[in-house]
Amino acid sequence: MMPHLARIEEIVAETASGDVKTFRVQFLDPETSFSHLPGQCAMVSVLGVGEAMISISSSPTRPRPLELAVKQVGRLTARLHEMEPGDVIGVRGPYGNHFPFEDMKGKDLLFIGGGIGLAPLRSLINYVLDNRGDYGKIDIIYGARSPGDLCFKRELYDVWPLAPDTRVLLTVDRGDEEWKGAVALVPHFLEQVHPEPEGKLAITCGPPIMIKFTLESLKKLGFADEQIVTTLELKMQCGIGKCGRCNIGSRYVCLDGPVFTLAQLETMPAEY
Image (cartoon, rainbow, N blue to C red; front, top):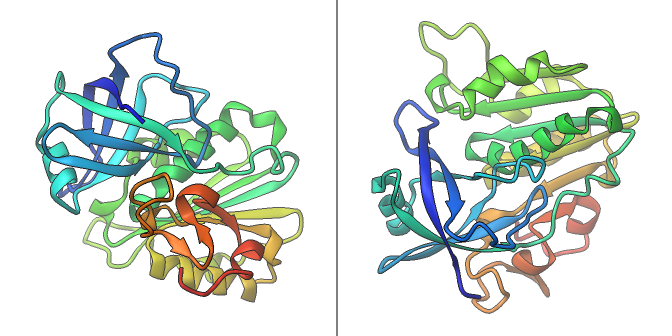
């Protein structure tokens, strides 16, 4: 339960407004036994301010520095955004389950992300790319409110499209004078792309409203509940099932999730 101390090595502004930043951190004790799997989260703390659950955006195949993408939405994240390289934070965890990357072997993968929701997907995408021979074709559908709100632009434009059998398809809610890509909400864009469900798994993460309509679009496209994986980490708070903020019926997102198949969600109250 005690956090590991970690020093911020580098801070990268992901969005034009700077409301999303990636923090690359190194543990002060090089022997720290912190290891995670794609989809897991960490509890990040700032002394005298508090702590918050944050998705780990780096792949376990690239364990150090640990990367945490943080959107400024409250007191803790606002303080984090004020910090600079060299400052020290607390990190404990990892928490939650992980994406079923073993069950995904041999299948085509369709990633569908929105906004900061690309952060946990990025961990899995880079894991899959680092084990490229184990997986089929990869499509990455990603959207944001505007071109300036797209995160991880270097990988979106310069890295992932160059990987074998990998496509990156981008959309924004509203374009600008320089934007030449699609302009559509993610679920609508998904239906325009019209991926075939045969031999494919869909993995989605984003704002709750995007997830809700993306799940409906995937079902409309013929994906079975067992072919759809999503993550609900935005509901998590304490990470140990004590605060009651993330329970859905008798299940706790922080203990039983944050990764669920739609088949699992269909057995739970529709509170997600």
